[in-house]
Length: 96
Image (cartoon, rainbow, N blue to C red; front, top):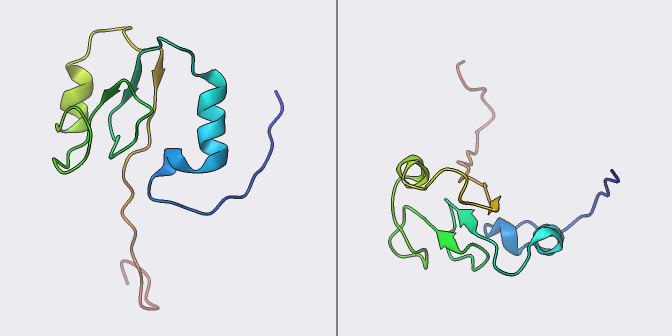
């Protein structure tokens, strides 16, 4: 296995970041079932979910409920990039 490091500008739409999208496209094949439980507005998945009803996702369920509702072994690829909560600290450490 060869691992290459590539820098790219961060983006809230992770799978639209060029090196990440290229990696997915390298392994994606026509007709694959691609599940994305945190899709937001991504067009990569063939079965998409996002809790936010204002996104383009097909379903708007809690990700755990969405995944539990899928048949076993139905996906060829699962894109998993859950939302991250960012926090700015004002010089103090958490818990102090």
